[in-house]
Image 1 (cartoon, helix red, strand yellow):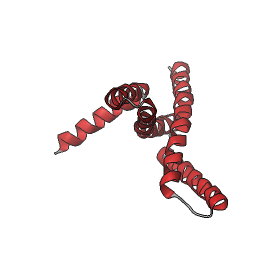
Image 2 (spheres, helix red, strand yellow):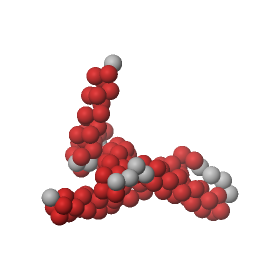
Image 3 (cartoon, one colour):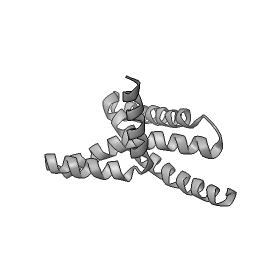
Image 4 (cartoon, helix red, strand yellow):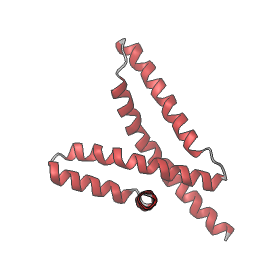
Amino acid sequence: MQWIWESFKHVYAFLAVLPIIPFLLVYFGYGAISGDRKKAFSTAMDVTTALLIGCVTVLFNRIFHSSFGIFGILLVLLLGGGLLGNMQYRLKGSINVKRIMRAIWRLGFFLMSFCYIILMFIGIGKSFFTA
């Protein structure tokens, strides 16, 4: 049973290193099967967000010698959900939790992509100047 967990961790780590690869695999694979490019794009975003969260967490923790990465990301996502929920309640008078979660997850994709690029450049620059 241990080898299954180790295999899963290695596959996740491999896919999270370059998140554009799983994004393109899901986009073109799902697009070829379903024929719906819009749904393929949103599905690729959803899958890649999970990989980006893990990758940004590790990059943040290594660059800043911290263990706050995942908690900071979760905090930002929860605060965003609260703000969107408040806005939705003020505008419509009710809250659609599914819609808020989907919006936060998709916004998380863009936020994590931005953080991934910035942290990757910082990490590469830091390794050049400290080596």
